[in-house]
Image 1: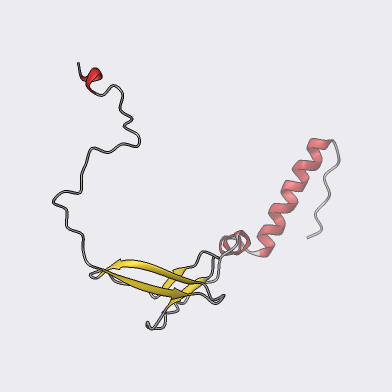
Image 2: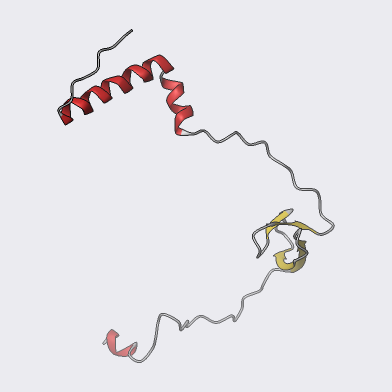
Length: 118
């Protein structure tokens, strides 16, 4: 019976909800300008905290018109795999591991391993 009652309706795009009795919050229009001169006007709720930076459609950071200067947060430099490896091992340890791995590779190819000179 339930299958028949929904026959002929497309539930993926049709909503049975209405805006009756819904009150929307007050809004204010904020303007952002990017370095390329693009102006973006966005509605925010009066109660919302308005960000001082917004990403423009061109990908640059747009600043709020007549707003406070955005805070620049200090960021750590990005750590590479090499940096993390050096935190765990010293250069002599890494050289020794490299020689061991190269010896294993040479023996798997049928070559003679090199003699260590240290």
